Amino acid sequence: MSNADVEAGGPARPAPAATTGIKPPPGRYNMASNGSAPPYMAPSPFYYDNAAAHERHHWPWLMPLVVIANVAVFVAIMFYNNCPRSGGDCVGRGFLRRFSFQPLKENPLLGPSAATLQKYGALDWYKVVHGGQAWRLESCTWLHAGLIHLLANMVSLIFIGVRLEQQFGFLKVGLVYLVSGFGGSVLSVLFIRKGVSVGASGALFGLLGAMLSELITNWTIYTNRFAALANLIIIAAINLAIGILPHVDNFAHIGGFATGFLLGFVLLMQPQFGWLEQPFGSKSKSKYKAYQIILLLLALVLLAAGFAVGLVMVFRGENGNDHCSWCHYLTCVPTSSWKCDN
Image (cartoon, rainbow, N blue to C red; front, side):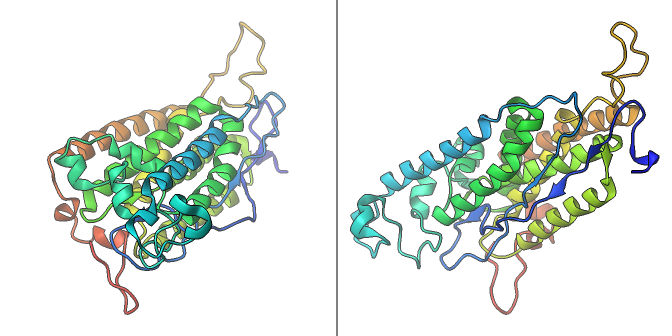
């Protein structure tokens, strides 16, 4: 380890390392049309190895509770969906009964109908803007298009969220999760007018974005930081790139990632090493570096401005595509194999 890698006053912390693991399919799913959903890789499970002796470890309980809540909501939605009532060719009708899934040609992810999701909180532009149902901007993050969708997001949440909660505590990570999901929904409803959108992946991308900004704002206390930064950027770019396939709401991913990235500068800032080791009552070294404070203030301004402009545009009924003629390519790029509808 070179001297350049260690902040004076204490040991450097190993940089985030990627774990090899499950790369499950879809994230935020758009139920705009029938047909099979494309493969999708959820945010790769990075986690932090806390090596500093004085660092506090938190007992993770919020993220497991969020997983349980998402599963409970899915079970309740399937109960109310009651596929056999419609008389269709339900999947698993013989043993699942009213919990059986919609026909695969309607929902290939093994889940309820789009109408059921819409009724119980899916993101719907018209209902948000003209129906006075702004609560859908958050409720949609607790719904999933199907069992495959649910498992993919919950596995990612366990790998990412639990480790972040261990390091930063339930309050900070919980805020990143909730606000990022909301931010993803705001950007989604600005650009997507057709169909309904559900899924927790906007919030998951927010956690991934927060991991990136946490590495940047706490740059001096990590070793191997350039490799860790490159890995995080590559993983984020790959996942966002996969979102240009049809049926995946990439606007929710982008909005969630951007929100989490900015929140990371605000909520996940760490004191510089050497500050805690100073004798009580005679601390000569400041708690935070100047660049950390600058990044925090800049992030606060961008967050406030972004949400203010975004929400004003949403509730004025403006279409984001009218202000950005190429932005629709961020969520779907048409090819000879598929077409993009909105």
